[in-house]
Image (tube, rainbow, N blue to C red; front, side, top):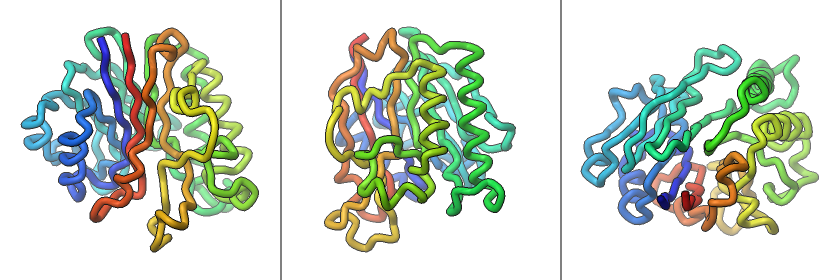
Length: 262
C-alpha cells in the first residue's frame, strides 16, 4: 500500500476552505492533517472535501482557537485524543488506517513572545506540553506510527534563516530544541523530512509581518513529519509546497508532504 500524507497549519479551515479544496484538487494527498482549524468539528465544511473523495475525518475542535483534524480518502478511525499538560486545548488527534498505521496530528503551543516561563505563561505551557509528550512516549513506545503537525520549533541551524539571530527567539531557543529532541528520542521518532532532505536551508513558515516574504525568505521549519523506526525506511518523496504561502489570503505555513510504501 502506497499513500501520500500532508500536514498543514491552515490558520482557520473555514476562512481558508477554498485553499484546502485547491490543495486537495491539485496535490491529492491521501491523508491531510490540519492544525489550527479554529472551528468546532461540526462547523468544519466537510461537504466540499467529501465531494473530492475525502469521506473520512477524525479531529478535535475548539471555537476560534487551536483544533486539529485528519481528512482522509482512506478509512480511518479515531484511537486517541490526548490533552497533554492538561491545558484544555484541542491540540492532538490520532487515527488508525486499515493497514495498522497510526497517525498522530499535533499542534504544539506556540509559546508566546518571551522565552521565559517566569514572565510568560505561554512559554511554560509549551515546555510542559513537550514534557508530557516525552513522558507519554517513554511510558508507551509508539510502533507503526507517523507523527505530524505544527510542532512550533525549528530544531536545526539550517531550519531557520539565521541561527545566531534566532537563538533568543521563541521557536529556536536552546531549551525548546532540547525539549523537542527529548520528545523525539523518547519515541525513537525519525525526522522523515530531514532523512529525505538532509542538507540545506528548509522552511515551512514565513511571518505575516514580512510584506515581501518570498524575497526576504526569513523562514523557519516549524512543521514536521516523523515516523517510528519500523516504517521510517518506507518514507520518500518529502517536500514542502512553498508556493502555497503565496496563494491568495494564505496561511503563514506551507504544507509538508511525504509518501509511504507500506
